[in-house]
Image (cartoon, rainbow over all chains, first blue to last red; front, side, top):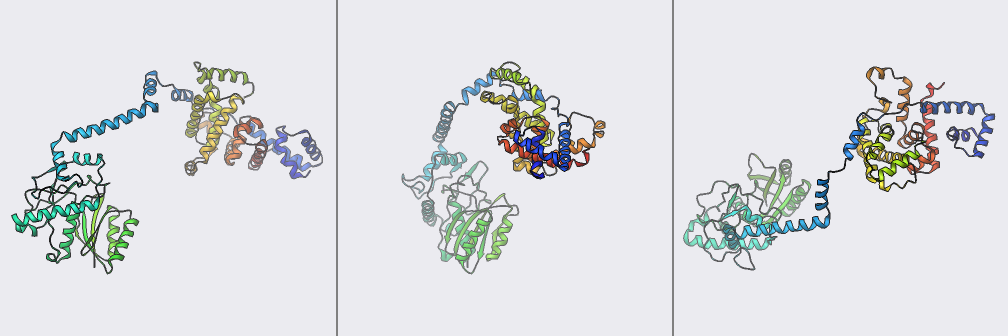
Length: 349
Length: 185
């Protein structure tokens, strides 16, 4: 046995955990090796020091604190738990609660004439929900938030293209009426809506004006953007956008006909670039990189129009990056931005 | 722990029957040992108390699962050791340990500042040396040399082989022997 092998056995020797054979071999080595005997003694002394370490006592009040924590729950609470916690009981009750809420919403909807009137305006035909039955626009319609909620809760999903088509049809209808009743109205800016926190006064869809009468791209963009404002946003945001328009314009027709009104974008602007397609890809990359969300995209005659939502913190970087993509100038930019900034930009060349 | 077997069997029986004061007796009997292991492993009194409470709550909930194949004390040490090692292995704990006070301030009993001043240099060195061991060696030394468990009990508590207990204990003691060299006669 070497010294190294002998010393590997010291721990077991001290604890008397060696087998008879191992013990005999070790003893034989120790009998002839003074270094290992001395080393063994130091090893024993070390273990003796460890055994002399005093015990640790738990802090005062420990038992009480444990008992307090482990105390059984009083029987009334156990009874309540027994009744309500088991899944076989809990699940049906939750299902019943969902049904009750749904029934409640339906009752509120049926019992509120304003909601039904608004719905009728949006659903002229069984197949198509929104096209008006008659060219004459009805009186002002108030769309309450309950209406939005009812629409959402009923799970109505509107096809974006279909709605665009309906909005255009509505605009054409009103344009025809405007031409006969108020010819100058077609040249006016489309009316924007005025809202309060509780209700959204529905404004008319913008009149569709021939493009040749709008030589300025700013005008065209505004027209497009206003049209977009009438179209529903993505389903996730539908009903949540509050219209924050400026004061109603004098040219606005007194009768509000359109059934939809959404907030205009917080920031609007033009991005003049050399290649629209390249710029569109760059904008898409920017949206992705900055954590923004593209909510809509429309092909305008002067170029694609992109609407996106971005956090207030990331907006300055977006503006900087847009300046690198092309010549970015805003046509609308409030002094104070909301937490989530809606940006609408048209890419022109 | 020796000599507690019959008491433990009675205590386990009372615990299973949910007898009055059975759980309280268990906590009273083992509070210092459980807390001691937790403190030596974690090095922080508040964290050690929290962990010791968790040990007893687990025992309270799971006493029905205790089959009596090992001693009650071994079962308690097993739960304590496992919780300590799990906590030490957690990433949160590893982050928190940076800057944490060392185990050198471990108190063997509640003492005042004056008495602490008089604590021997040896005791401080011992605590520091133990604290500086790796976790897997430290738990073996704590269970063997400070708590007095046998190799078999340590192997059962840590769910490791007997040979592993033996080698880890030997390495730990050799480490300590080097660290405590100047205190040896």
